[in-house]
Length: 497
Image 1 (spheres, rainbow, N blue to C red):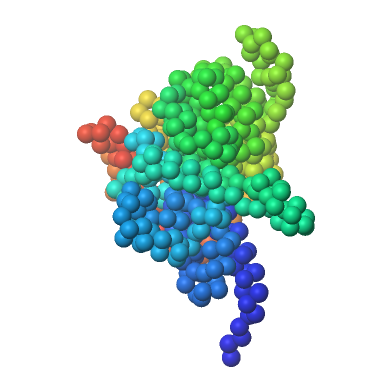
Image 2: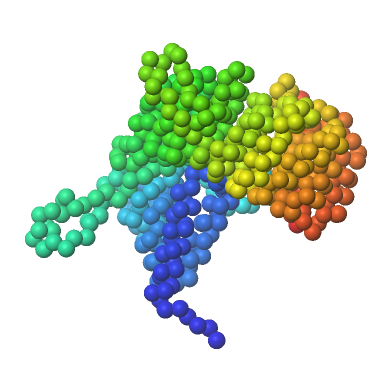
């Protein structure tokens, strides 16, 4: 016997799901997951709920407040003024799940290389998903499924949204309500989220921000995916960004030589920065101070700064970081210990490292304790990076002593679920599996100039032996492409339970 819930309970459940959908549609990136895949799942959820019944459709439509890429309208019809197209557009709007009059937030995708806004066809993404790696990068690289939205169309829609108002409910008399109606009306649309404007170019990206239609959402309420602190990014650039941008999700320290600019960027967007990328951070002497400064252990001191007092505060800028990735920069065990102790929310940590595999392991005790005490770390990718060839490379085969020490270190984590390494050593993974049952996903990225025929077999034997506890194991080999002069990844083994 089928028991139907009362309609008011059904509507209550739909409203809860609407909050969940809005939260996901506001996501500017998906830490530790597949951004486009998550977007696709949310679209399917919306469509499934809307098709159940007319009551479900109305409840869903009345309570969703976030639009992605103007999905409340057919932008093709905006260019036409004939009656047939206008009528068709009216019908589309009537049956649109997202209602323009309810919108509080709009999220748009921008191609930072082509300098245009676009809509990505998720159905094509799903079709090609098996052939593509998971979309966990900062930018979307595949342009074949993009539909361009011209800037003038974006601005026309922003203008329309900015003029939509709602009246605040009041207990005043009808006459008093009429007198105060203007004061009680408020603009609904207040937030604009922009994905893929990276601010990497001092003029182009700030020009895009300044070219948007001026309204409450674009005048200091923009949420930006990334702030790229590179050698050409200056305080002038930052000041332009600050005028328009309220929150920044990712901070990239990209060969930046201005410590004052780094600290000022953190001070401005500390509460919203969830991802931190560090690339080729200046000199070795400066590098030794970077993590203590970001953790608030020592104050930043710039002798050339006349207003030095404002930088003497000891602020932990790492406390809200969830994802930290370091490229082309040596990271010591002491650095890792500090990061784990001061990044209380970090779930993914990807440090590069060029030290010899047996170096510094007399300092392993404190790092081991930090790993044990950190309760948020889910994924650690500990690759060895060779700067000269810009590839992942371990120079020597690890000794038995190293395998024991390193496996003991990794196994000390009580929260980690995924581990990646550039060390071609099945014995290392086997020892981790023996000591820690929570780490069940492994990846190995190696470079073999003359690939050994037995490269896959040891890992296959490892899988066969540990299928009870092993969820996944991926073995990737980097092969040099002489035409592009780059190393391309080739998947040799991809086991999933």
